[in-house]
Image (cartoon, rainbow, N blue to C red; front, side, top):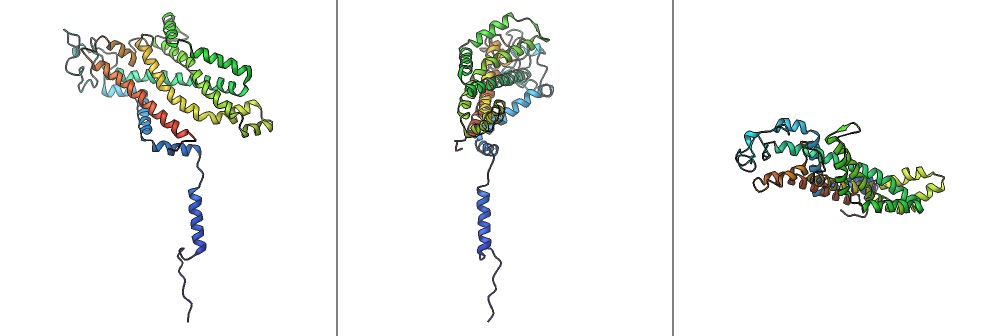
Length: 334
């Protein structure tokens, strides 16, 4: 009687079955970097992804504004009096003169293309918002990490400076500053001077918000074991600050930056609305809203379109910022 033949299937081989199970367990517990975990969480948040897509779209619109206007619109400062009713000074046709030639209609009185001015206005708003955020983040990170790490009188001095700047009337200061500025400054002219001032002042008065967050995180991180280990091994202060503490502050800084940009956009729009923004005829969303105040009863679209542009932009940044915050939260479950 011959011995039965055994199959080669892993189901009947205990050793092979154990190897397969070990591979499955290994794959399931394979470590992932913080970046991979954050990206996985962010992909699950559909609202954050939608906001991120809109943000990328707006950035592309701002970068390629001349190309977009040349294809779909008219020069932003070109008058089209033939589109204006000579009797009432309002756009001909319905909805503010919206047509295939003027996608968002025309401005009352002068007939400038609203679509082109909205597209170019995105450049001003995003440029000021991003650059002011960079200034605030750099200053806030430097002073915040110094205050949190060194403590003592250094912390007290920097904290009191932050309290003073937080209580300072930023809008009134910018309006007063703009009123006394010359048209030419440091090689810049016209709207270039206004943009530089807006970026500098908004960024300067914005860094205490970042500084407080960085200071608080640094106070917690400086007592961690890896910092004590680096200090016991003879690491200098510069090494600890920039190699041990700063990498662990990237997440909160990134989150606050994404939430600061929409605030900067609103600040720039408010200043332009009050006449302290870029100089005409440079296009700006806030400036368009300011001009629409006198004509909104006859042409409401001229107020609705730039207002919608501001609303959509700020909403997209806020949704994306909330998603980034949840994705980078180590205690989050999303």
